[in-house]
Length: 196
Image 1 (cartoon, rainbow, N blue to C red):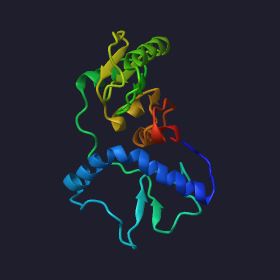
Image 2 (image 1 turned 90 degrees about the vertical axis):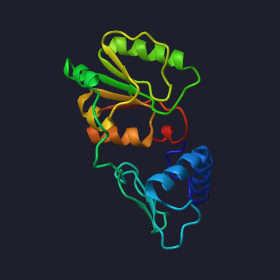
Image 3 (image 1 turned 180 degrees about the vertical axis):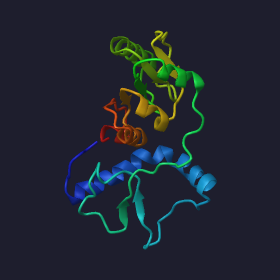
């Protein structure tokens, strides 16, 4: 991804390219809008509608050429939290030095088994770790006793309790790492992950 101003024409072209890259997720977004927000399918918004971007303008300043109806609002965080915390994870985190979090969410690399081996080698050197397998980005590894493996974990609860966050660079995970004030190491797989 490009992380600098390319000028008006190329900036707009990159915006259209991002639209093409996110097209595979259109069905998920459409269903979510319908089921959770009771919104009609997305079309061309009416003129007075605002376009809201859920990231902090302190992280990415608002471009000067944006129209007044485009607003970076800050990160959107649910007040309800992320649900119950796994007691085994809670006990692991409390039992020693802060672990390193390693997770890749919905991203799947070309070789999950090799990625798992690489992660295992790294966490054996660094010490304790929480490894989140996500949607299958990590698999087929016999982890050591200083590592707990979970499918997912509440970033809001976990990140303030870890030494560092290693992740794919998704916007939400990046925001959670920033909110927790923890060092982040981004290992991007695709799309906007390279930007974050």
